[in-house]
Length: 163
Length: 163
DNA sequence: AATGAAAAGTTAAGGAA
DNA sequence: TTCCTTAACTTTTCATT
Image (tube, rainbow over all chains, first blue to last red):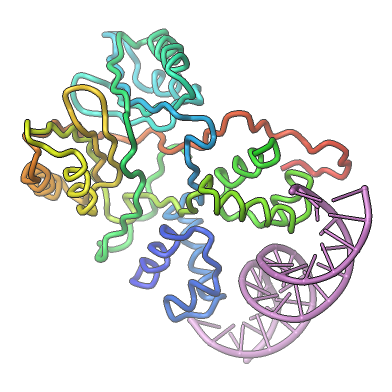
């Protein structure tokens, strides 16, 4: 992975629908050269996908909360994570250091839905209790941040979290 | 916004680089009809952008943390948020209910960088103290969740080769 | 990685349901 | 209105150098 790859990545982080021709203009390469590089970045797991960002309110998801998941003594974290993944309102799931096993971000339509979702979370086997932080407003989210200088290629190939 | 719009949104959440022709096949419309609908969704602020997702490790951002920001009594929250926005390692920023004014997600290369970043956060005017939760692993993140967009074959369309 | 050409997609304009 | 077809233009996607 060289500077050009990093430039392409930064450009696609900023605009995921940029055409190869555009990218080529930005980095000073032909469209086909860019096409081949992007294909390699996708196949090697560096680029994991492209997604439209949507105003959550416009899609009926006006309530966001961050929920810490306290495991019971018998809690198997992988099984808990799998149960969390089965709930569509759980948008993100982080295993964390500290008393809590996970912090998840959930998005629902109403506070009633939030209450119902928390009940579901607490009913997951291995979950002892939850700690909920209600989001009042999202100041910004998921900003593209591609550091200008990056270390050398990932050792062997990119380690994978479940895709 | 009707069912077709929701289907288009769901498809673009799943694959932000889907072509208009592809989207048209998925929802049973012509490419130009989809083109026009997507343009309206973009102009009305429903779709806010398209972004490549990148394996943070591959781009040299192996350390993630969630940081609660405790404001001092004199803290102006908008000014704090602006200061947070100025730090590139702050990827997301949520104003929250509770003792803390904000919870932010930061991404850096090393624990040394994390320490330096926390110092910067605490030096922000209006920030009394921080509470840091280190992320050990990201089980999943930013999953597409678009309620009410059940992907059924379009009515009155026979030639289907499944998606 | 560039070139060049065929296939595919994009995008505006005009008209129909 | 929304959608379709047409048609010119652009991009993608190859094989080749």
